[in-house]
Length: 156
Image (cartoon, rainbow, N blue to C red):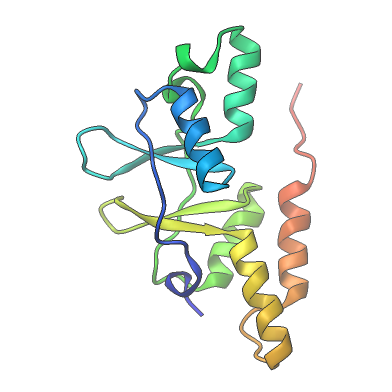
């Protein structure tokens, strides 16, 4: 099974110059925990990702309201991605290594095409387990979730 079969294609994005309030609004209205960040000007090229935690921590640490902060103040620039033609198992491996729950899906030019979440993979694995397909196993999903939530060790 390939990423293109499970990814969410209808993904909203923001730009680095948008306010964090705008990113939070998108997360609230779309019931999601992150928003991909694309460069301004409408190219759709992925330049980062901002999560609900990123926005909260930025507001807390800078002691300023979300409307005074920009997405660029909180976003992650070094984003792990996948491609539509990647096997889902490869994307899952990337999630485990990077300790992330979601991967933006991009084309070869870096243009945002969608988002693949651990929830997407878990839903498919649960569906497959009833039909006895073996592309995705619930054990693999559990291992990925365990790796994602594993406490990161900070070097002193």
